[in-house]
Amino acid sequence: MIFMGGSLISYLACILLSLAAGIAIAFPLGIQYRKKVAEAELGTAEEEAKRIVGDAIKDAEVKKKEALVEAKDEIHKQRTEAEKEVKERRNEVQRLERRVQQKEESVDRKLDNLEKKEETLQNKIKEAESKLKEAAEIKANQFEVLEKISGYTAEQAKEYLLSSLENELVHEKALKINLYEQKFKDESEQKAKEIIATAIQKCASDYVGEVTVSVVPLPNDEMKGRIIGREGRNIRTLETLTGVDLIIDDTPEAITLSSHDAVKREVARTALERLIQDGRIHPARIEEMVEKAQREIETKIKQDGERAVLETNVHGMHPDMIKLLGRMRYRSSYGQNVLQHSIEVANLAGVMASELGADVATAKRAGLIHDIGKALTHEIEGSHVKIGVDLARKYKESAAVIHAIEAHHGDVEPKTLVACIVQAADAISAARPGARRENLENYIKRLEKLEEIANSFEGVEKCYAVQAGREIRIMVRPDVISDDQMSIIARDIVNKIEAEMEYPGQIKVNIIRENRAVDYAK
Image 1 (cartoon, rainbow, N blue to C red):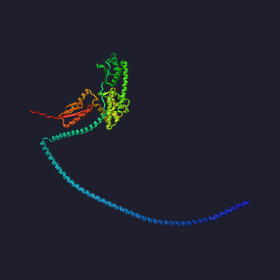
Image 2: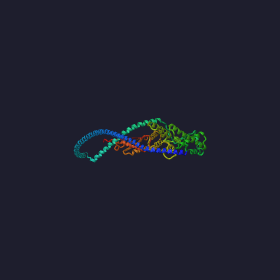
Image 3: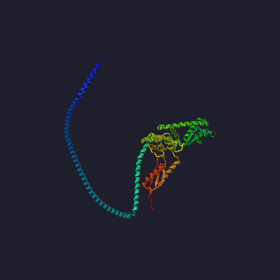
Image 4: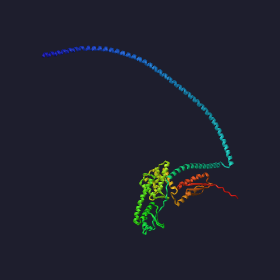
């Protein structure tokens, strides 16, 4: 076994040695073979490379020739276009040169003409100067001749001409004033008449003069003694509780209640009538009846306010304002009931606003409460306009309504159409014949003031206020006031009357100028 094992190893070693010897012999042979193969392939590659290079050189030569041909064509094309453009520009330059040359020739001709005209003008200027000098000499000679003939110097003649021109201007001014006055009068009067007539026809109402006394009828004269009471306690109680004076005189079966506060007077009248009907007249009963009458009058005041609001169709008014409206039922102005006047102003303002295209609701609202301040004038200091404005602001009335209240007597300038409408409606309601009465003292003062304004103008000789102060006739001195100046002085007098006086309706100003020639036969 050992031998067998040793032989196998030797055998294997022999094999390995044989393989190694074979590899040693085959490796150089393989290398030599690979070298021949590589040299053969390299030769083939070199030939292929030479062929490719040769083909590339041929292609390049062909493309080079083609490129040269294309480049020559492009150069020829560009050269042709450039020559064409140069030719066109040369033609344009030549055309511009011709135009410039023509303009230069035209300018040269114009310069020549101007030089000729300038020369002619200089000659004319010299000629004109000589003629002006000659005219000045002639004018001076004529002035001398005119001064000798007329007996006026140049300054005197100038004054005379200015005076004549002033007279002519006064005449023209008077004519223009008359013309425009007539035109505006015709147009405005026609439109105003239509609007006012429509408003008055729709708002016609009756008037009852308000007084400061009320008369209570008695069933018999015996009732006077019962009203006076023992030692006058009943009448004193009644006067104390109501604040009204009771006048018991010789008038049969009547007692007069006197007070400037119409509400208190109405309370006293109602209480006294109830006492007379009841027959039980003593201080406790009087106090009870006065309290009951006050509650009734307060209820009636509220009802009168609501009636006024419903009658004029004014909505959304504060309850306190409605009560104040009702209180105006017991106030009067120049004998005119203030509540009735306010209702009429609201209706008139609504009609005029609809005719003029204004806000009817705002106009009626402002017209209804324009005199609301009169309900509190005896309780709050200030004019009824100021009180009314404060009340309107307090109860959140609109700015248009507040302005109309403030402007309805001209305390401020009316700036809205509604304010002007309320102002006109107030004047219409107050100026209607029979609507108001005026005491004698104020009437006389108004006439005196009217005549005083007329007499304050220069040239007025006499003046007379007629037609209850609705017309004034003024006689002027003919040597001071000319016919043309009459229209001007009439307008000045009207402006002063409007600025300084308050009056219902309108005042007509008549200017009278009379020339008389008087002579005596001897």
